[in-house]
Image 1: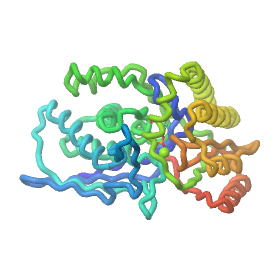
Image 2: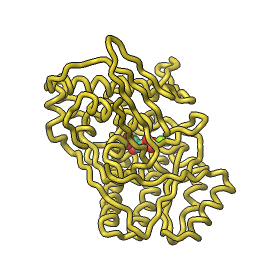
Image 3: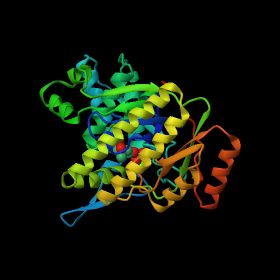
Image 4: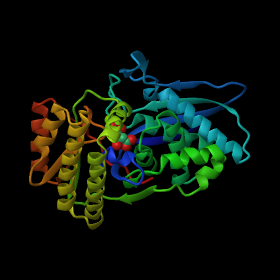
Length: 357
Ligand code: PMV
Ligand code: MG
């Protein structure tokens, strides 16, 4: 039996802007995993998961028609990952075979609620990794990232793929997203193998660390929202509010570049300052697009955790889910925040940043 695992992730900064090519985000990989195991069989295979559908199935309307958002189903991502890995294996001259594939996830709560840790990305990366091992393909993190990104892109289409990068590389990364149009157009003209081995325009992945005197806290407010629907809603107002939107992109980039400087210099104060700036930028985006990012519970979470020695913001698409805090590693300060969260029914998720893989 072959097994592989990929971690969950949390955005620390740069959300929404990172969806546009070349724009940065900082993303942490956390120690909750999706595992995939593969056992060779003859003539037919099975596919088994402890959680194919989310307990909450998101739906929207298209021309008044009720529509289930299939982008939230893990099965779609597993199938797409299998397709990509097998096309790549075949182009390398491997003979395809049959297998049983088992997927198990720690990324949801006991009652099946999503914590917003990026289960679709982790399931995609874990499936790609397991199949690359199964077919004995010589792959590094860059190739695993690109194969997983192609698989994810085919299902979701509108994400930055930053969660894929975090799941693949582990630790904390400074990430700028690739030009998705270039990827899609190149895929139309050339075999997948060539696309994987070309340089992807605008993509950068740089591994960074939090300063040693700091601590990452994660709070969960429940009420998970659908990231792909929120991203779509933001993109509706993109053309109508082009000036404000471009201003948001510019300021987010400046903020993330300063934050990167803070990470590289181990300067906690600079990181915290820019976390506060990024929170404000996301709130302004929310105002001019009329999309709710920082819910009332997330505002409580952030306000409680914002002090002279700590900075907080929503993590990811918002609309519920998690907020993050970058605090001075001071037990009294931290206990104080967690205690006040408890009074407001905000749950601390005890997750650690993973090592680089
Ligand atoms: O909601 P999450 O944790 O999956 O994060 C989404 C982050 C966005 O920038 C809003 C979307 C993306 O694909 O990067
Ligand atoms: Mg989310």
